[in-house]
Image 1 (cartoon, one colour):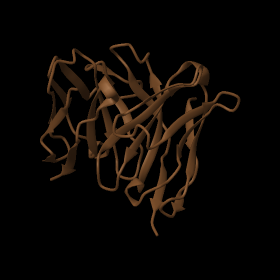
Image 2 (cartoon, helix red, strand yellow):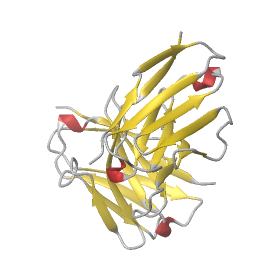
Image 3 (cartoon, one colour):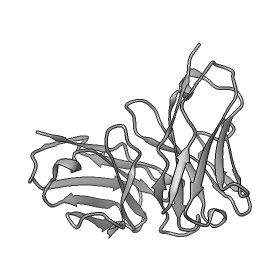
Length: 123
Length: 105
């Protein structure tokens, strides 16, 4: 059974750093892209970044490039999303999602999702 | 880059009704269109990929159709558990549409 289990809720102050995690199981972690998606309170879904654990190839949405860092550790089948300096506008729910399909393929989609990590940034 | 629009923003229907949700791309995307369902307080769930293929475990009352720029998600007869927000997504930059909320009338 494919599972993505995310780290717990975080409350941070502006300017602080943060790294949230997504522990996977039930499939070959190295061979599937994994993505992060943001959802601000009461708003829609925004794709942020995607990484291929097998070679750490990472791609970013233009909206998030330079704002976050995506990474993966194949020794523990876990993906990460990191901020160096949080802003109040980063307050949101963050989801990781396993990706089915190659990034160059016409058919590619997010087939399994984590439960979400709520990040609150407030002074 | 192609933008996705969804209509209507909200659909007020009763259990047993047919729901028709629209997703339109600003430029042709072939059949590279995915639909997700999100219930309150939950993560999104994959429903339809490749515009018309149902994901594993998705009931047959959910049907995806369309190609190019116009796509439709049809729920043939709404069950109580179908009241949720539905998002479409395209492959380029994995852009999501703004969502359609299907609410109980």
